[in-house]
Length: 154
Image (cartoon, rainbow, N blue to C red; front, side, top):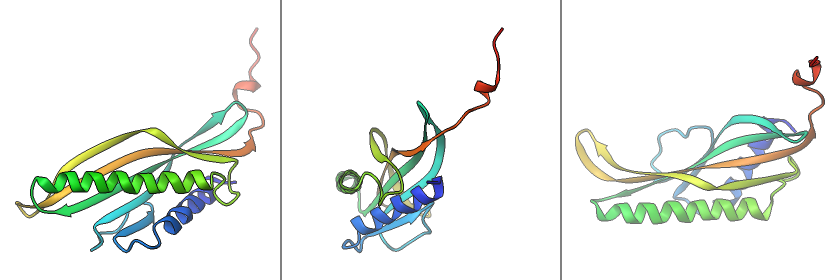
């Protein structure tokens, strides 16, 4: 399958995972500003490559959670962000072929977390936590040949 097909299937899985949570906006690409406090976005593919002879694609899953209030709101935002990441991880593990669009997809256990203050003008209004994690999809499609195999070493 193509990178776009896999991304659409990954996004659809996440839409289904969060269907019952009206506080979460799931998007393919960067979300528009929203009144919803939480966002889950599928970005990319940020890379494509090969694992042996198999084509791979790497996407970034970004979870963003906003909680209004002072410093104590940061812990709430961070706890919520990790809960959303866990929901996404569980959903992808439950359907690793993403409805048959790839051989297998997996969320990398390595991730990055950023905690920041949200402002309205110069006034702090809340806290934001964003977590970025890679999702790799093994396409199941064999790559035939490459420029490297076209060269002869004497």
